[in-house]
Length: 211
Image (cartoon, rainbow, N blue to C red; front, side, top):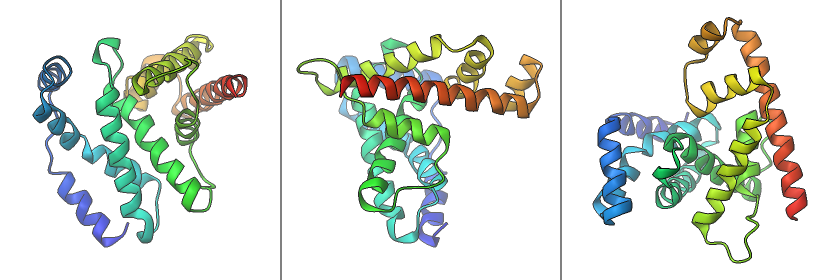
């Protein structure tokens, strides 16, 4: 990690995590009362997530700051478009937008990443799937994408679905998920890889149909 990136990570790691009750109030104040201070607080509190995602991509020192800035733009978009009443977990939703924004930047300005994880490939794919509405606004587009993801999850084989929902959507610890499902960590990993591939393939088919 570049020295300045390490310092940025240290500074952002000092930002306290939101308690569930605090986060619910911020979303309520922003979405229902149009409180801009609450909007800014949500963006501020989730900046460590941007740093974490960008660092995982292992960018060079020359592009790290650009990727971080792109990630923050993705975070702002996520905060502005998120619909709490839909019941989705914001951190999961924001990860897709932050990753997708950063990976799109890499594709446009740098050599295409060769070692993307399954989740990064999915985020990049999601970033580039259009909505089917004739004149969609951006919030409607995001709702469409999230609905498609959840529809894909619903048709996964049972074990793959349980693994994907627990580890990816609910962000539970893989070790605990494997223990609860009475399977090995390696088998859990294989289930996740299979589920990512199925979802990616279904979204690719959807993208091709829309294009």
